[in-house]
Image 1 (cartoon, helix red, strand yellow):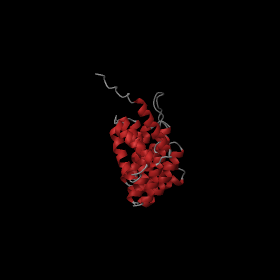
Image 2: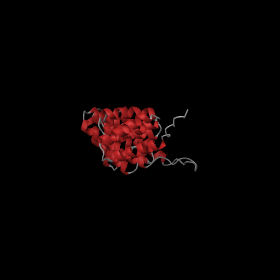
Image 3: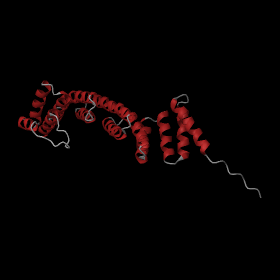
Image 4: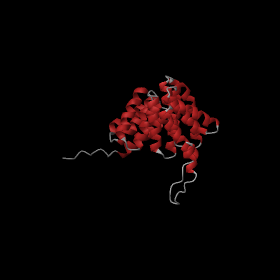
Length: 245
């Protein structure tokens, strides 16, 4: 590895070429490869790298190597810390590290940890939507649903995002799962109506919005449903006058 690292220092890239990877990036790639071939050695190397200030990449490789060596309980905190630090640095790989932490938790039967990671992905998805990064938000929600299939919020947000991305079959599937998990929820009924109207089913949309109002008449969701119903009524064609004979 040292020979590879030192040789990179003397490679002169053309002006138009992409910047060379940093030493940390190269070491991370080598560490991950080693973890796949010899996880025990990778654990030793990553541990030393962490002590030498390798940061979140060292921790990520350390956690990955531990998980590859079936030491899932030890991998969880290492991968979780790597994910948090990567997120703080704005590194998009944070999502991968969170997913790996959740998978390690599932493998270790640490359900509570998996749920915590899933909740983090849901929060991350909300932020990504606000940043107009729907594809990244979609990936985060996919991870959340995988880690915690009983998380109704993850399914609801998935349905909303799929509707906004015009993926109506996915939206319908997600909202059906959501309704099974959260059978009497004003937000679920509201979104079910939104999906129905997007699909052109006004009767179903009206029914769902009316249900949202019935479930929680003083809620924000009920206010939105009321406005949607009013807009639907305003757009309806006037009744046909009977023809005189």
